[in-house]
Image (tube, rainbow, N blue to C red; front, side, top):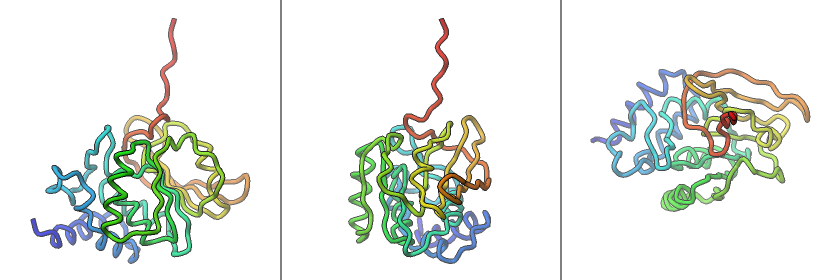
Length: 216
């Protein structure tokens, strides 16, 4: 596979087609070597137009979804970013190049360990990786940008509270297919606006799944 040809086709035939036209986003997605972040056994489909399976029933989002996510959040060079769901680490690397600093959380230690190695190889030094259950996140710090890469069947209030006034959050809410990707903007201490972006389907964030009612 010619990597550069495949990368160019991904940008032109998948990402741009989904109305991702922000030149910074297109440049970052062209520069970050996506093929280094997919599972080794799936290297040949690194640029495919679909979710790529990861361990633990998780997935790497399709390139067009990642592009829309990055464009919607409009990350600037002085933004502090919280990423919930490190996964493959590809989006983490993109955020690192777009913003000032990134705190990336994942439930699975092998994801954070693998991402740390890959980011170090690429010379990325403005990312902090932590292994934890993000649903128990205590809001000690607020962020300009929050990206939730797993779906949340129910609203997770701690994520909303971790957003600065004027900050933006990408979240996929709902259960079943399809789910709705939304951009949430914090307008004040008590007000949020929500914009529907597109429909998609990704695995639920760990410990956010709706529990079935107990029947006697």
